[in-house]
Length: 360
Ligand code: ADP
Ligand code: GN1
Ligand code: MG
Image (cartoon, rainbow, N blue to C red; front, top):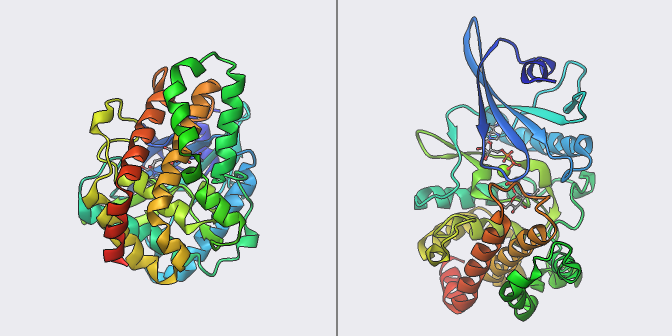
């Protein structure tokens, strides 16, 4: 089915005057569609869901429906531009399967909004922290049992490490020889990587309803006021740890460089970005965090950075089938960038914990 047909199925009327590819996500294929009718122009997001990653898109959309309804009800009159709104097809479905078996969904485009892949504005970073902290707070009374687990064991870091080690042993593409340094890093720092998984299994960290994919480009900002609007990309909202959301967000937002920066000399954890994000996050949800959670904020950055490094390397060793890549070796570049960041956080562990103490 072509894009006109897909738009029509979602009741998007008018002449399509622009169809722009949005490249920021690593999983789904996202288009911004602009349509014109008698009353002016309107924009929509039309997304092809990656069904290799999300095996049950219908159940996933049900999660998103439950979560967005819950948040809208909480926000009441203030919900305008603050929550994702998906469209239904003429037959009332939230997903459309086309004749080639591809699965589509559509969201209203949140007008005058922007996302940041790399951001140096500390005010924006503090707001990003607050947006993810508030998101967790709004779901604090949400029934976790109502949610389908869209990707089982998504942040089971121990399992991720074991998968990497198993694939390294298989080495089906003969890529292991060039990553021996990286494998050595995982072996030497394994304890740090699996710390939260172990604590979770021992019942020492509370299970909450979390976002689980807290890159700063999953928060929309108002283009003019630079105030945070909606938290988006709700595909992985599932029971999880507050620390997964915090650690993942810091690894992405407080990096001095992009997640896939090839020149590793540019990569470090920025003190000021780290401080700004943490301040926003703790102001929003610090009040509900347990002592164990507060004590492991810096550890969670190491966990999530190592988890991503392991996932990127696993994808590299097994043929780059999961993350979208722009060039051969992209996943290896991502791995090396994440390992560089993890090393920096490990080196400055005490210093970063001192900063956290001033914010608690
Ligand atoms: P992925 O799962 O691939 O990361 P996202 O749902 O995060 O896909 O969408 C990719 C990008 O598209 C976002 O980072 C954001 O820039 C833009 N985007 C997505 N949904 C909306 C929306 N409703 N309004 C405005 N921009 C959006
Ligand atoms: C993916 O979809 P996107 O780009 O927001 C991935 C995250 C990773 C991230 C790394 C469902 O997120 O877990 O942290 O790439 N999402 C999924 O850039 O695997
Ligand atoms: Mg995204």
